[in-house]
Structures are given as structure tokens and as C-alpha cells.
Amino acid sequence: MRRAAKAQWWLLVGLLLCLPFAQARDDHSGSNASLAVVAVSSLPAEARDTLQLIRQGGPFPYPRDGVVFGNYERILPQQARGYYHEYTVKTPGVRHRGARRIVCGKVPECYYSGDHYRSFQRIAEGW
Image (cartoon, rainbow, N blue to C red; front, side, top):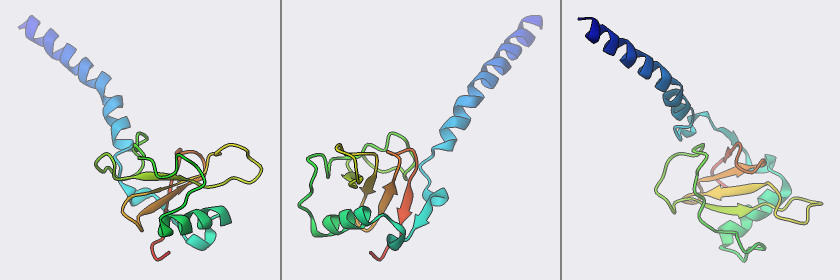
């Protein structure tokens, strides 16, 4: 009987140690219900320019524009690999690509990140 109680205790300890990992996974479940929506008119002018290029199908100023976005941060809704593509939003005064991006799934499903994927805002449809 004592051996069974000890095994149950270790099982409980193991489950409690796994709990933080399970909770962390839920925090990035890919649900866009918590993503703020931003109107196109509230985006920086450079982001509006990038949206216009996306609508036109290019040409894009940066060689990496249009590459597959992996969604490794799991902030955007989960989709099959290859669903999302990223585009650079020019940042005035910066000589490199900067941190601003637009990520699109099936257009008009697009998201704006001003901080290199740490946060996203869903761009209101109708642009």
C-alpha cells in the first residue's frame, strides 16, 4: 500500500510540473479573437502603400517580400504552412528592412506588426 501512495505522489508532482507548459501553450493558441482590429486609415502611410502593392501583386521593393511567414510566434490563427506571406513596410530613416511588416493569408485577411511579430493587429477588411 505504501508503494502505491508513493507512486501517486510522484505522479501528482509530475503533473504539477507540466502545468506551466500546458498553460503557456494555451496563451498562443492562434485564436485571433484577442487581436485588435485596425482601420486602414489608422495605419502608417507606408503600410497603406504596401497594402496597395499587395493588392496589385507587386512589384515589391524588397527581395524577401512575399516569402512564406512561418507563424512561429503562434499569434495569428493556425493555418497550414505556406498560408501566410510577409511583406516589408518601409520605415522612414532606416536603411534596412526595419521592424514593420504586413502578413497576409488569403487576401483580404492581413495583419500589421509594427514590432517585428511581437504583436499583430488585424487590418479591417474592405481595403
